[in-house]
Amino acid sequence: MNVEQIYTGCLAHAAYYLESNGEAAVFDPLREVGPYMERAAKNGAKIKYVFETHFHADFVSGHLDLAKKTGADIVYGPNAKPAFEAIIAEDGQEFKVGDYTVKTIHTPGHTMESTTYLLIDENGKEHGIITGDTLFIGDVGRPDLAQHVVSDLTEEKLASHLFDSLRNKIMPLSDDLIVYPNHGAGSACGKMMSKETTDTLGNQKKTNYALRADMTKEEFMKELLTGLTAPPAYFPKNVLMNIRGYDSLDDVMARGNQALSPEAFEAAANETQALMLDTRDAEVFAKGFIPNSINIGLDGNFAMWIGEMIPDIKQPILLITDEGREEEAIIRLSRVGYDHTIGFLKGGFKAWEASGNEVDSLERMNASELEAHIGQQPMVIDVRKKSEYDSEHVLEAINIPLNQLNQHLAEIPKDKPFVLHCAGGYRSMIAASMLKQRGWENFKDVRGGFGAIKETKVPVSDYVCPSTLL
Image (tube, rainbow, N blue to C red; front, top):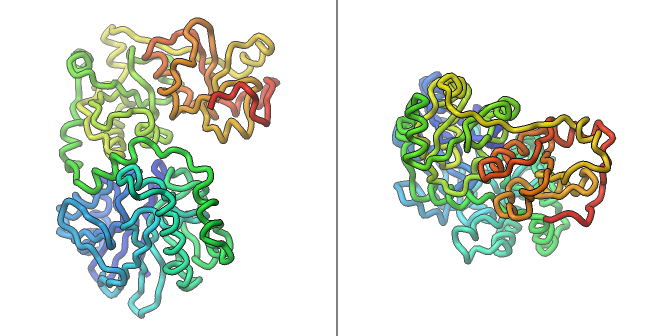
């Protein structure tokens, strides 16, 4: 069966392309729809349907642009109420894509409209299931997101629905079906997703904790709801964009793809109060950057940290990137709904520097320098996740996870030195740039993070010490 997974690592997202006999369908497309259209054109196929498994929270789907540009019908499962024209399928409804059949299986739980699509080949053999966020490899979708949009949909209600969907709709299916989930490891839509992005349903029945045959509903709900962390703040905003609609990516690109001279860039920053976002590598940024800019590097979990650290999804943004990566940055911002880039610095930071404008820098230290000050080192602030910190951390270090930095600024001293670190240096530079922007000066960032620290003789604890703040 001709089904292709199109995986995007920075979002841990999988879209799917299905083609048969000149017709094609796309499942859960990303915002930039060109690659799907090019894929269809390559084989002379027409995209007939855009299937959505649910209203996504972690990214803005490309369903509207793809339907507009190809004439395809958008399909959702039962209970979906989009603000645009779409087919709302009934449970069990079938759609033909060439000689293939796509059958709707309503599987509420992650959200109430969540739907799994059963793929049936030209011979009537069931091939696989596109599960969205209902079933992952090694995990299932978290049931606590919908309540941030509809308060009555509590996590307990949705967890109960998810148990029933898995037992009554998914587990009775054939063991040899291939499971095609919407996400893999690294996504915030689940807790324990595998790095593998496909598997057989039979193997998942053996290895996925949520599919244990002897599990009661109460046991399932307890295991599913234990350990859930707060979802990123941008999730509900992306859900609403996916329900209500959004600007075409073409318009977003036209607005953001404006090359600005250093003088025009500075004027725009002053006139609009736009956020100056520098997407270069952390080490390069530390050596020199535009004062008051923040660093979230493209070569990392860029979209996720944009969503975590920039509260206003409508925030005007001015970009500083490596030359040639401006469009990439605009697209990746748009994937999580940040559609208000208003321009980029032509020639990048080098042009700013060459114009004689003011430049700032951040001080970094090697782990060996921290080791040299054992017994007298300054306060150490660890910005990794609490689970990482709990596993192992610098003795007496304080834990302020990066995604909670804005809520804990009052706990970070301005009158004495401190050291920042994360696992490898990416997250701590985000924190360092944001603290610098807010007026902190007397601190250093550890190059290489905790990975480098572990190679020194800096005392490390494998238990949670009393100085943990969070």
